[in-house]
Amino acid sequence: MSGAARGEEVARGAAARFAHPAEAEFARLLDFYGVRWEYEPRVFVLEREAEGRPTRCFAPDFYLPDQDLYIELTTLSARLTYRKTRKVRRLQALYPEVRIKLFDRRDLRSLLLKYDRSLGPVRG
Amino acid sequence: MTAPPAGVGEVVFTAAQIRGRVARLARRISQDYAGRELRLVTVLKGGIFFVADLARRLEVPVTLDFLAIAGYGSESAVGAVRLTKDLDESITGRHVLIVEDVVDTGLTLGYIHADLSRRGPASLRVCILLDRPHRRLVDLPIDYTGFEVPDRFVVGYGLDWRQRYRQLPYVAALAPEELEE
Image 1 (cartoon, rainbow over the protein chains, first blue to last red):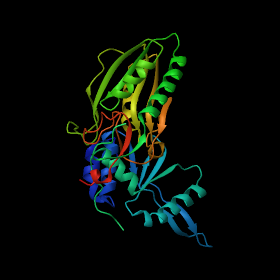
Image 2: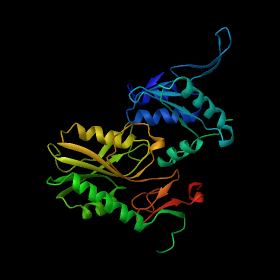
Image 3: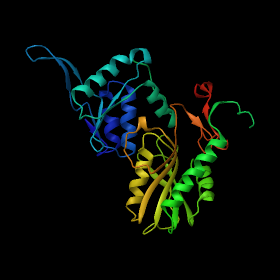
Image 4: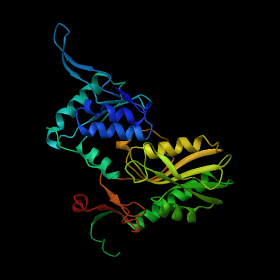
């Protein structure tokens, strides 16, 4: 799923496929400013068992191709965000060429406050 | 300094700190643009106090122009970002400095920068008072920065919350209870 190229309609139509309303809101924001995005386009393997089968993977929520930047959103409380933070750090260690930013609940709230929007229900 | 009004919390940057930083920015800009005329372009309404103070400190000839945009979430926003007030004069062949109050994601500034770039200015640079780089989604060259701002919702010196508090001479955190309205 990707957006911006076809405008807001993409985000609206696909909203039901987002894991959380905050992700749909984020997609609408990117569409509004014409920033191209892809939703969970790549799965990164973080751990493998001895035979090489992946045992731990991570698919960041958004990829912004023009910025070559992955974005992971979390609406979890600060206490529960550390697992996501660990995943992001692990990804950065294994794939140093990958640019990724974690937008936590506080970042999202600040971002949406700027536009006078609410974050939606808390997950987790 | 008079006490902050109800709804406003701790002062993050005092009026004196802002004055000092604006003067420093103006000195740098004046050196960089020595011998040239500069067109300052500001986005309404947040940048008006900053550009007014900055312009008065500059030692090079300046002209002013203003843009307004319908940003995400605004009443006049429909589908996509757009200008609601364009520049009054052409910037083709001019040395242009975009003067903005605050940049975090870079979405608004990215749109403005791209729009002005297409108009053929002789040069195009960016001067911001407040920067929140950790939330940047769109990378942009920022040529002049006043302060890095902590991760708090701030108001004053042009920055608003629902159009209020722009007139404060300092930058202050919005009181948490104001956000819970």
